[in-house]
Length: 199
Image (cartoon, rainbow, N blue to C red; front, side, top):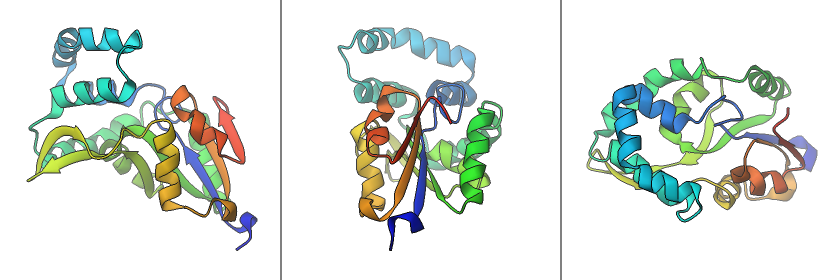
């Protein structure tokens, strides 16, 4: 296979396809604003330490996720994720959608490679014809969310690792990558065509 015969276009989600962070937006969608505000107040020491650089991204994110979702039934969680796809449609960046469609029309494989939770990206992505979603996975035991992540938070180098796990022969395909933050740096570095905050 020549390198030019297979092209992958990898898009970050939050801030690249959407105009806001979907973790907080999903919590708001799931519980409502009063519960979100209460949670943020109670977890403010953790969030402050994260902003100051004393707690890493993955640790702060898992504490936040666990606070809101530990003990929830995965079926109930996934049902809300399905409904959230309509909300995603309200927070899209039009230029990103145009670029996704452009790649699809060219016959390129479009994937989402995000630090967000796969479960709430996948229903919207499927509607867009994007069937490959790489993202942070959640641990489930007996149908219940444990509050832990299954594997690593899909951020930074983990985005690269997960992509190469699925498509390991990097020299056999061209890679476009789209991102907007420091968490996309490593993915952009391995791309033939990196796009940082532009399309």
